Image 1 (cartoon, rainbow, N blue to C red):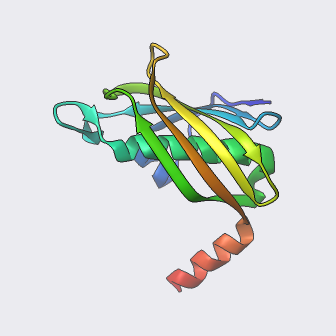
Image 2 (cartoon, rainbow, N blue to C red):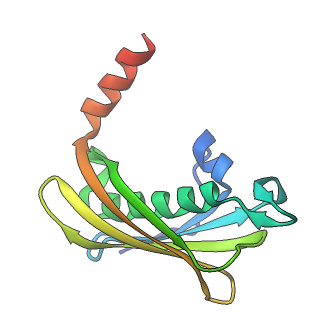
Length: 146
């Protein structure tokens, strides 16, 4: 089990999503917990976090869950992503918690919840992920920007 409470990665995507810290990446269970700070700049309608940010948090948590199991040699690519919103999410800290529901050789099925600081589930997601060798994804990205 990996428990990380250090500073979050400083890449642009993590900063845009408001990642505060990676709380957990467990290689045995495929569980991941990430803490995000929802800012007012992420809101609409007088303080409701826009659904795209919530979807991004859940998607990132599910990716971290499968990467905990497979390592960073594979890039999880979303084949399908479903999000259900149960209640408006307000600015402040939130936790995206994900786990592997079922794993195959190249496809994994993931689940995730978004929790507020009271532990209430604000949204949930399920995803089907394709595991692609990271070297192949990076080579394709280099070709597309060349």
